[in-house]
Amino acid sequence: MTTGPENPYGEQEPGTPPTHQPYGSPPPPTPPYGTPPPYGTPQAPYGAPQQGYQQPGYGQPAYPYAAAPPTDGLALGSMITGIAALVLSCAYGVGLLASPVALILGKVSLNRIKRSQGQLGGHGFALTGFILGIVGTVLLVLAIIAVVIVIVVAINDPDAFNDSTSSLSG
Image (cartoon, rainbow, N blue to C red):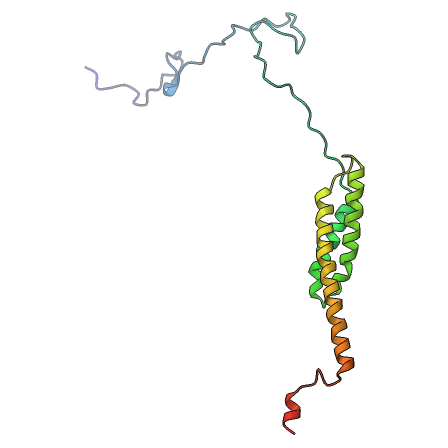
């Protein structure tokens, strides 16, 4: 009469050959193409078709990616100048003085990129600087007009900017 397995964990005694795979794993698969040739037999060179090892062809051949053209320096300068001009316009409008520079740099850069026929990149940078230059230049012109109006009014009517409530109390 047996009371149960001698080893409750199912391990084999040391020195006995294994009869099955541990933990219920399946046996290793056999190679699909048979056994490899013995060491020292000549092999076909790399890339040559080998019997049994051929892969199916794919639809498109591999082409290398085209390198992006270099960015025009004026384009980047135009964009940076245009952004800085609008950001610095909060400092009493001083930054707006750089807006015409961004406008001119952007226009020159757009012309250079167009003439290069794809050899120069940065069209988006140049366009951004050009547009920011236009916006800043318009704001600059409006600010100059406002300052001129204030000066003309102050010259023609010296009391135009005096506090009107002080004249009523007297």
